[in-house]
Image 1: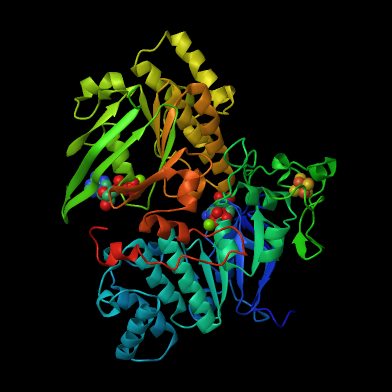
Image 2 (image 1 turned 90 degrees about the horizontal axis):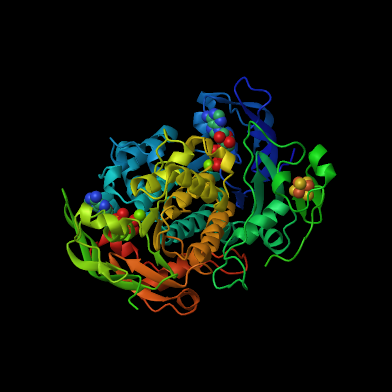
Length: 329
Length: 277
Ligand SMILES: Nc1ncnc2c1ncn2[C@@H]1O[C@H](COP(=O)(O)OP(=O)(O)O)[C@@H](O)[C@H]1O
Ligand SMILES: Nc1ncnc2c1ncn2[C@@H]1O[C@H](COP(=O)(O)OP(=O)(O)O)[C@@H](O)[C@H]1O
Ligand code: SF4
Ligand SMILES: [Mg+2]
Ligand SMILES: [Mg+2]
C-alpha cells in the first residue's frame, strides 16, 4: 500500500453487465498524489468517464466493476455501498461534469442547491449556510452573488452554470476534485477563466485534481502528470514535461502531431497530421495491441501479444516498440 | 472578374419573447474562387445565422448577397433554385443532419435527383465515385447512417455536398463534434478535394487553431460583426482587434513550457453587461 497517495486505482476492469467477453476498462491502474493535477486524456469512448464514475460508485446500471481495488488514502473505497459513498461524494471527492445541467436541478434556485450540499455534510443553520453560499459564489467569480443565489439555473450562461457546479463541488473542501471535460461545452475564453479558477482553488485548498479531457492544450497548461488512454487501456503515463518532450507510445505521438500548434506553419503537404483509421468498437477489438490497425510501427508480435504496461526511462508505457519514431514536428 | 461571393452590409434579426435579437449586424466580405475563408467566433456570435442568410434559408433584414456576380438574396424559392446547386453546405452534427431512414447511396444521390442531373445509371455511378473520393468504401452504399462513425458520417455529408459540383460549400462547424485525429482526417480531406473540385469553402468554426494551415484568410466575428479579416498566420502573429487578442490568449497551447495565459476578461462583458462591443 502506498501511504503517500490520495487515490489508487489498481487493475480496474469494467464490463457491461453479464458480458464477460466485452470490457470497457481492461485493467487500468493509476494513482493521484495529494495536491497534484493528473490529466487523463484520450479520444471519446476510451473509458475516461467510466473510470471516474467507477471511483465515485456511480457506474451506469448497465455496467459493473468486475475487478480492481479503489483506495482512498490507502483505504478501500466502499464503491458498492451507496449510503457509505454519499458521505464520500461531495465531502472527500467533488465532481464536475461536462454538462453543468446534469448536476443542477432546473426547479430549484442556485442558492437552494449549493446550500443542500453543505447541509448534507455539515450541521449548521440554514442562515449560516446561505452566508457560506454567497461567499462560495463570490469565490468562483460569479458577478453579484447575492442576486444570483436566488436565480434559477436557466437564467445563467453555460459558463456561469459551470461555476455554480464548481462551487458545489468545492463547498465542503474535498481532497480530490474530478473534473470530467468541464469546459468542453464552453467557449475558449470562458474555458480559460474556469481553468484559472480551478488552479486557484487548488492552490488555496490544496486539493488534487483529476482533469479528464481530450484537449492536449489543457493538459499541457494544467497537469503535473498525464495518463493516456486508448480503447479501455492505459497506454502511457508520464510527467507532463516528459510526455510532451518524448512521448513513447505511437498513439501519444499521433495525438500530439494531430494537435494543431498555433503559430507553427506546417511546411507544404496537408494542413494537419492525421492518425489513420479509427478507434475499434469495444465489441470487436483487434487481436494483440488495440492500436495495431492504426500503428505505423506494428509488427507480427503486436498482432498476437497484447503489450503489458512497463517502465521505460521515466515513462510507463504499454507498447512492444516504444520510443521515438521521429521528432514530433 | 467579380468575386465568387460578395456579402454587403448584411443585417438579420429575430423577434423573441425577450425582445429583438440583432444576430448579424452589418457584415460585409468577399470571397475569391477557390479560396478558403474561415469564419471564427464564439457561440452565439451569429456564424450560423450568417451562413443561413447566405444560403437563402434565413430571411435577411437588409443588405445583399451576390454569388458569381448575381444577386441571390431576397429571391423566392423558385428564383433561388438555379443558384442552389452552386452553393452547398455541410453541418456540424452528422448525426442529426442525415435522414436515418435513408441509405447512404440515396442520401448522396438526392441532390442529383432533385436537380435532374444525368440518367439514373449515371447518377448511380457518380455516387460510387464520390464515395470512393471521400474515403468511403463503395460497397457500403446500401448501409444506413447509424452504421457509420461520426467521421464517416461527415464524409457522407461532404460527398452529398459535392454531388452537384458546387462553387461554394459552407461548412458550419463540420469537425466540432469529432476527435482530434478524425478532425485532422476531415480537414485534410476537404483540403485535397478543393483542388480537384475547384470549390471554395466558407469554413465556420469556433476553433482558431484548426484553420491556420487550412484557410487562406480568417474572418473573426464578434457579436454579429466581423471585427477583423486577415491572412491566417498574420492574425496569429499580429492580431489587431481586442477581441482577437483575447481569443488567442485564451487558447491553451499544447506545450507545457508555455505558461498559461488567458488573463483578459473581455468576454465577460457579454454576459454581465450585454449589448454592444
Ligand atoms: N451504460 C453503458 N452501457 C454500455 N456501454 C457503455 C455505457 N456507457 C458507456 N459505455 C461504453 O463505454 C465506453 C467508454 O465510455 P466513456 O468512459 O464514456 O468514454 P470517454 O469518457 O472516454 O469518452 C464507450 O465505448 C461507451 O460506448
Ligand atoms: N431562430 C432563432 N430565433 C431566435 N434567436 C435566434 C435564432 N437563431 C439564432 N438566434 C440567436 O441569434 C444569435 C446568433 O446565433 P447563431 O447564429 O446560432 O450563432 P453561432 O452560430 O455563432 O453560435 C444568438 O443570440 C441566438 O440565440
Ligand atoms: S504494441 Fe505494436 S501495435 Fe501496439 S502501439 Fe506498440 S508498436 Fe504499435
Ligand atoms: Mg467522457
Ligand atoms: Mg452555430
